[in-house]
Image (cartoon, rainbow, N blue to C red; front, top):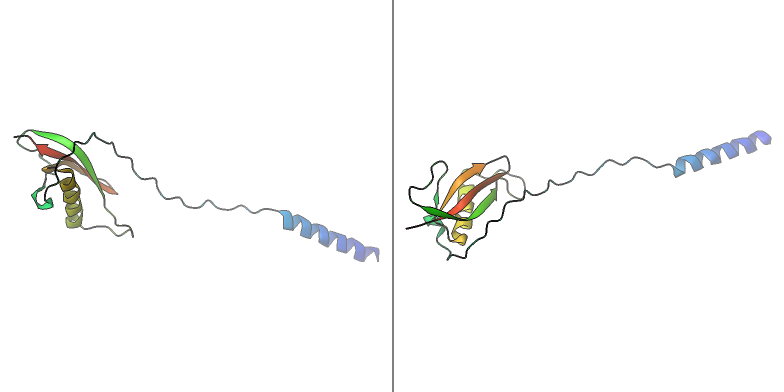
Length: 123
């Protein structure tokens, strides 16, 4: 009878110890933080047609200009599919047009973003 009682106490003790133990949980994957962009004081200009925006990747405009804002376009859509270059250019033109710009200069590409400075030409 003592052996059965000892075995019962041993089993109960094991169950209590195992039942109260904790398991290590893995860290959940976190979404990368969005890239912060420098905000330039933006003057309010009338929007223009996106088709009138010139994209200047390498050379600056030959006339004087004033930077009126910055644009950034994610190179991947919300689902994670890489956007085509023509789509990215259209999105840049639309954003620049809404700011009232004439051109986008200093266009840079990294792994996630395409950025540029929106300029207004000075006559």
